[in-house]
Length: 361
Image (cartoon, rainbow, N blue to C red):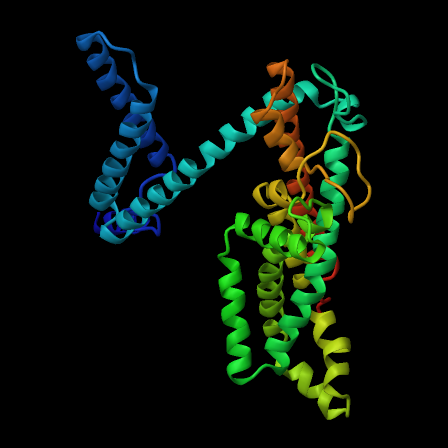
């Protein structure tokens, strides 16, 4: 009898003893929302008000955060209860951040799909006062201005990062680092004013507008991002690689070109791509220096040039005779911008995967 009892006790004393089942959190969550729904139903009936689904979600979530840790503390102990409480809190914070994003995406897709057609991507707004028209001139302008900003920012940013990591010492390096930190926090409209003032002084034209001015304004925003991302990637390159190259008699500049940069290439390319995605949706600086136009302009150095963010702003703020048609064009422009940013992020991941250093056997 004693042996059987001991055997039974040993079977019950498993690693899973004193733990809630896997479905316990889900049951607690459902019970919490059911309780909250019942409370709000009673309040709605008693006060003759509308039933609040938002209130049910908030109160149900709070009840879940209270009930589950209490039950877990009784069954599993204080440490596991705190773990479950923090897990629920972090999950709730994620959902709180994800729901507005999902709502935004749904609104932009549903509103912008109406004009997501061939005409929108093949026609400009020249001589269009009502329905129809497109944004091809804004798309071309965005690509040209962003390309110009990339050509300016990438060499400056990479060379600055190389200097800070490989050569920079003393007060000069500290001063450059401080300036990069300051540039990181510059408002975008200030860069537009800077570019406008610069080109107005250079050409003695107080009404100067051009695409290259927009490229300069965006480059001021891009350079700190490129510098910071490149600097961090260069710091990740092991010093052993540099020392091995020096031991073979390779000069420092050639070590940087042949060893350091190829090793950090994946991270540098990813940082550059993300910097492009960060500035491609800027509106304020381009509105000031690049201006807006209804016609196509392929010349980055002459005349006004429309960009997609300014196009969206202009269609919304100055819709003209047909308000609904202009707003449809604006929503489609916003959807196009989001898709461009998504594609750039996917390219960044692909580039990081392709150029990542291959692990040895």
